[in-house]
Amino acid sequence: MKRKVIVIAGVIAVVAIAITVFMKMMGGSGVGIDNNPELEVKGDSNVLVAYFSWSGNGQQMAKWISEETGGELFRIVPSESYGEDFDSCADRAKDELDNEIRPELSEHIDIETMAQYDVIYLGFPVWWYDLPMPVWTFLEEYDLSGKTVIPFFSHNGSSNGANSVNRVKELANGATVLTENALSLRGSNVADSEKEVKDWVKNFSK
Ligand SMILES: Cc1cc2nc3c(=O)[nH]c(=O)nc-3n(C[C@H](O)[C@H](O)[C@H](O)COP(=O)(O)O)c2cc1C
Image 1: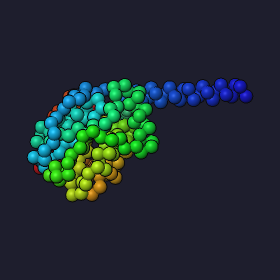
Image 2 (image 1 turned 180 degrees about the vertical axis):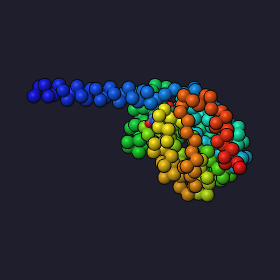
Image 3 (image 1 turned 135 degrees about the vertical axis):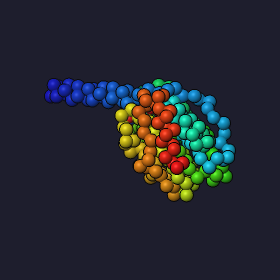
Image 4 (image 1 turned 90 degrees about the vertical axis):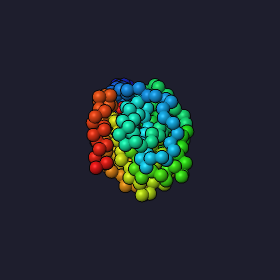
């Protein structure tokens, strides 16, 4: 009996270590986040480039998309930061996803400004094979009817985005979501991908 308990405890410990190591590998590397990025959006363009990024890859992709389209940048910022520690970020992200918690955001776009945009490029990292919860909050906050949403994301292995892109389609009420055209980049390749990102954008301006 005692032996059985020891074996079961051993198996649980090995599985827990394996999950921890796997998630650390999935965590990947980021180009570095700028925590004081762009100015307020004004609705001067009909293109919005909205993104959530924890370690900077999505932020870099968003900047290139904005340069190419002239679109206004908007960073999706949770009121309570995920901090810099991977483990606590991963634990909180998992808890929010499992419990479908929508974290509050600290930045918002007013209704009149949002109404000016026809196209929204929406950027995010894949988190736990899904869309990070701050992006759920963002999508549910606005009336996106009639708009075109074009997803772009980075990952560390889930190159098809796992469930994230379908989640955008599910949550972006009334919008046309170009799921088939989403841009996917491995996080560690982002720094060298300016041309790929800008060439991808050209698909939508033809
Ligand atoms: C909490 C957390 C969960 C993650 N889950 C996944 C995952 O399920 N699949 C994957 O490929 N990458 C996963 N990653 C890696 C990120 O998607 C990848 O590093 C991405 O490039 C980060 O983008 P960012 O720098 O814009 O935050 C995860 C990273 C974090 C922090």
